[in-house]
Length: 348
Length: 111
Image (cartoon, rainbow over all chains, first blue to last red; front, top):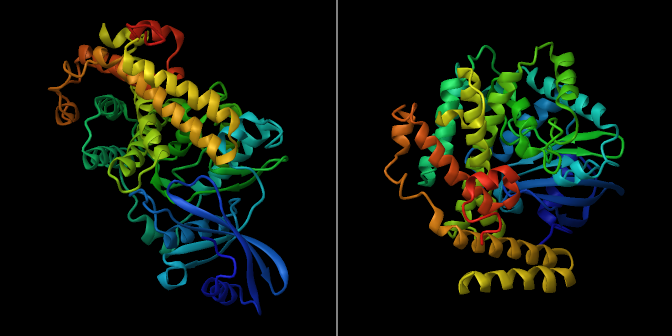
């Protein structure tokens, strides 16, 4: 099913764009997006050709993600703060239009598929410059001062976001009814080695290769604002640099695209913050646990019969690889804290 | 290799070499996805006997969260070994060559 000629959506677009006429001439479901569906819409607005992306929930969504209305408010705040995002057009919470809430943004040209971005060096322009630019963009996100709407969405600023994350991850495992000793041990070690939090900022929480768009010259957009929340600033840096998001270039710590130095340089120059490598390493460990838990949630959508899908089942199995990496990182971190050396030190 | 594993291995070959090679777009993607799933099931059968699940079956998340096992280096080693096997079953490339030697008793090919 597509949206070409969809009269209720055309009427909504007409009102939202304040246009004399709107005709949806074509639509296509874009690939990716296990949590949300993204539709490419080709329109004639007052006779002029315009392309948009319509975003709505997939049949089952992950508990931690925002509603479309909240995501739209967050995207609008980022747009106002000068972050490179697709221009927000409108949001609709009236189920009568297309059967559920959705948001609409201007379509941005570029490639977003993570493994392709990492592999195809004709994309993204100069990769070190891209890494720096991504650092600067992240710093702009962290500088967002929430207005009343955003404050309501984000809730109170937590005093200890590390503890909040660990609690959320444990609760998510309990909700899944799974005993995962690899993740439990990694989390416990993380808890014991956790850095003291001195700063809490608006954070993207899914800032990584795969959620950015680039063309041949460089960055065109930062996508997927559904997990935005308060966090310690290095949380996003750890997620971006975590090995699990470097795809086929584990040697390039800046998301498989650039050196971590370039990424850090861009972030530090825009934010004025000093990068604490140990703190980033802590969040890289947490990134592996968090991605493992989200993978398990996706696998559960298949296993429960809620949404039978081999793709979801295999995503769930990624938690095994992530759990192994997380436990290795945790052991290394504990060893570092105790001044030991060698992975086997934990057993000595 | 036992019969069940041989059947699964043969199925992987058909999916990868006969079907995926001649399919395009979504069908090719589905053939490769299915080949991955069957290969994973085959590896899981290969390592079934090596699981340490029985050794760690009495350990609860609550005990770990409460700090009861903070100094239990033996537990960490057992869980790490179990995690390595599961990681290998999910994706053989998840382990370095040295880790395969360290953690996989039955060899890197699961034979």
